[in-house]
Length: 312
Ligand SMILES: [Zn+2]
Image (cartoon, rainbow, N blue to C red):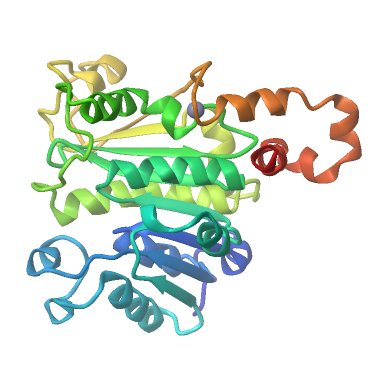
């Protein structure tokens, strides 16, 4: 595969050395990362392909009945025979911690693209425990808007749980049998255009996380975003959230504002976040002497502390 024409924007050499683990249905996004030079993929998904998937998920009708993970692996190999692909037909929530270590421990990026809140939430726990960059993709209200949350160890402070704390509260209310908004948002209504629109933005964040610091457009992206690790994509021109025109609140109401635009919101950590507060406190406890005498913790302080913190 000749990457000469994307090298001005993407550190292809780092992409080729990189390993990404994808949980759930990020079929088009995973293919686009391989188009962009990604060298190694692990895909975890237990679903089979249904006829309705061909209408919006980059699967062919001839794939109906196959496991999604198996079909994606074959499609990635057709795209680039050099890509290393491993797939697991498993429910991510049912993997043991040892299996997570085995399959996610060598990854440079974790991508969570499931309809299952429980799987997205476990993704947060595991990315923090392993100190891995991670990306979550979701759709609101029948794909009338999209959501991308990411975590960059040592850079972003708010984790997925800090950012989506309302969803966690709703989940806990439901578990107690109380009324709450749905947390497993069905993507019915979303078209392939909606998925590709959100994937196109998520893919650039993914390349930015893998190649952070490279002297090119994608390599600069995560530093430029800084603490703005919640991105929302307006898809339906009439999208509102609980009656609020959230995009209009940020972007104004100029007649040129219509749709298909993105806002990147600065996020602060929740002081008592059950997932990340201990980790953040541990990172703050690292003294300057420790930092200067330990190259690993200096390079990725939170990543280094997360491993020692999780085993304590
Ligand atoms: Zn948190």
